[in-house]
Length: 361
Image (tube, rainbow, N blue to C red; front, side, top):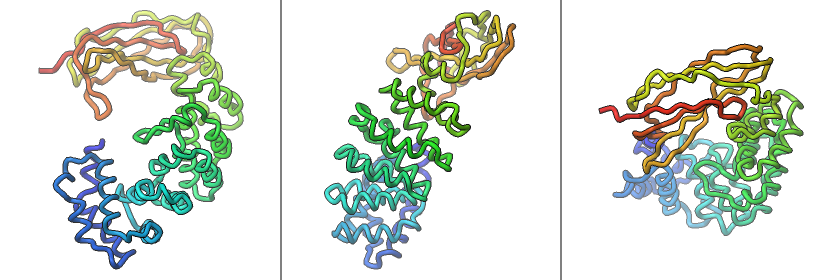
């Protein structure tokens, strides 16, 4: 994914367009010098995020040395900057505004309307959570859904590709105040951010999240979606209290028979097909998943849960079949060795089978 994005953003054309936009906002901007600084001998070897930081630093070299004046220029340009290059604006604040909070925090709220500032606000949160969260509480009540989403997304304890917030992992109480404001937001993007934030918190404080979800569940269709998405990690882990919120039946009376695979040796890049019979003694609400135990580079095992379906079934035998791809992806590389598939019914493993994944010579 990052490689594909590198082909689209921070290219000569996109940087030239970005420089032209800055030039329109600041007539003294040395467009040629900026471009020459960006495309130095190290540029091609940089990853996407490194290119952003590098571009930010080149921007700093060619803007006014006054931080306040630089922000005025960037604010003027912000509505017209497109693509990933726009992330350099909040990144400029993260790089050069840490000693001037009175200017930096309000301008992050402004920039996030055009390019999310969720990464840029993290250094400020790490240094003084209470001060920044006071702004988050205000942003959570903004008329702009992008700003409201920023108030939630920016303080996620485990935001992907962002610096960690260990203080929030330890104590999420300041975050929860923001989530309570946003739980019934009109924007689906904001509500999904609330769910993602709760899911982050659940990895360190499952009981806190379960208490919140029990209070919110059943209140409305939108809150139901939030609670379901917030509990996804707990549900995949088979957490009994999380399963109970959604009324899944006791798996003790359920069984899985005749777990079959279409071949015992699978070439990388191919599919494995598997099937099984689910036996139910009574009408049941069922969440069906399967786990693949992958061999990693150094021989250790790593498991990932995949959802099959969830449904209410009448008593009897339900035949299920699925296929799983072993093609390499940007997020997963496969390695040869003995793998396993387990069938999970309402959080409990009911059957398991092994097979050999081979290199396709």
